[in-house]
Length: 118
Image 1 (spheres, helix red, strand yellow):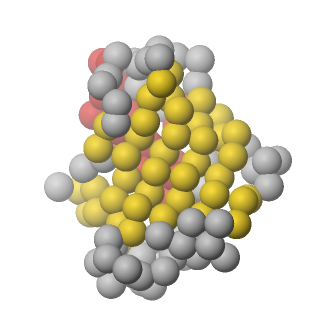
Image 2 (cartoon, rainbow, N blue to C red; image 1 turned 45 degrees about the vertical axis):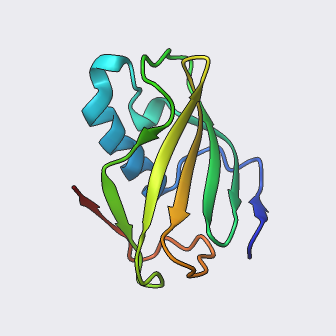
């Protein structure tokens, strides 16, 4: 459901979030970007047009915000897929945004996703 807040007790990355952040960690390891297993989740909201996941880690990250993730997220229910950005505040992870291309509704279901790197 759009705007549905996933319970605060959901402190782990979803498989899709993990895979997205793994791509960023591979590319930006030298900048201090943490591996997904070091990243904590404080909240997650599915908006219908994407998802905002508040994330944090103790590591400082030496990157300008936002960081574009060089993948197209493919999901069976989305005609054009989605993209992802990672935002930092004061050199710390702040949130992961997944945004749907076009006007398709996405309820947050990750079943059947794949990432196409570019």
